[in-house]
Length: 347
Image (cartoon, rainbow, N blue to C red; front, top):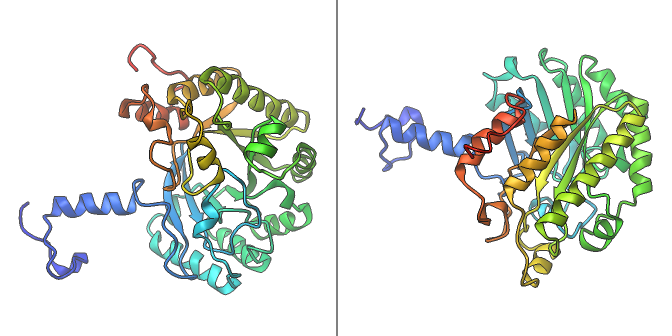
């Protein structure tokens, strides 16, 4: 179809598209490829939202626009797009309302919802508790949703408050999504600037146990820029195995999000990596091999591919010699549980 589309499709005056071009533009602008690192235009709009498949389920990810995270981890530059002033609860509710209005035709097929704010949604300083409770009440009206994922530093998990959320949305299981990054205390303190001692993390696990909630943990692959590829594999496996043991002790269902480390623009970590002549980002095939190994051992592992729209040039897995677009499809099948092993001969 070569005719240009009418203004009813939202084309600005003077812009001419065929239907095919319009569909491509919509897919790139509103689908998986849409920009993730751009700040929200106002306090009544979220930074980002996406209806996606995650672990073979329909997940709605919302990244709210709130006061920036109180921590400044060396490897993260997400706070650069967050507000420097508190965002009122009514504005946060307006953000949620905007998303559900935009996705009104998808609401009946959503299985889970993930709430994030580039920090901790359970930190009352950045995300008013009244707003979170009201959002939980709204989620209770989305009758198919059975998992509510709350992204937060684990220290902000307050069983009393989380139970109030559960009461507002009684059909959902709460999944605490948190960064563990690495077991290595030197890397956590000196390289990542995490400011979260291992004891604090373990205390948080005890709180998750009280709630009988699930846990999803970010583990960074190659978190120290001086690591060799071989050292990165060993270190990440130690971190995953530690989490597995500690969650098994507490009967906490665990999912690992194994994220290849990338250089975030403007971060201290990126400047450090740039100063190391031998620095190389992770090999994606190494990440795949470790994820495959852990799944074979009975763990739930998701391979993170996003660089959140903030990666510096030359600082992500796409720059390594092993990278190919052919890797993406099998990783997505693996993430959705449709395959448990990679066909290495074909890759």
